[in-house]
Length: 89
Image (cartoon, rainbow, N blue to C red; front, side, top):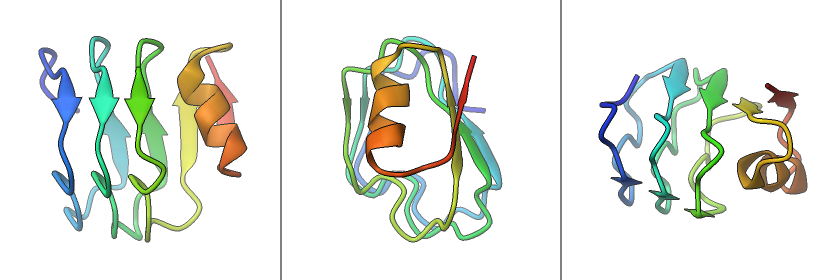
């Protein structure tokens, strides 16, 4: 779980950190390139509704990550467009 006041997750911020679940807090607006890349044990990432931009490479090298996001959100559409399994909230 990231700090509640997170607004942006920068490029490669958590690359290779070994996490298996990540919760991106509400209020986060941007996720940069390779932000969570190279975490092969990552199974689930929860994305908030208000994300304005998500780099398409943010989950590179993570395998088949399930993306949980609010129904109808841009985050859910982003995950579906890239072929990630999704869970709508």
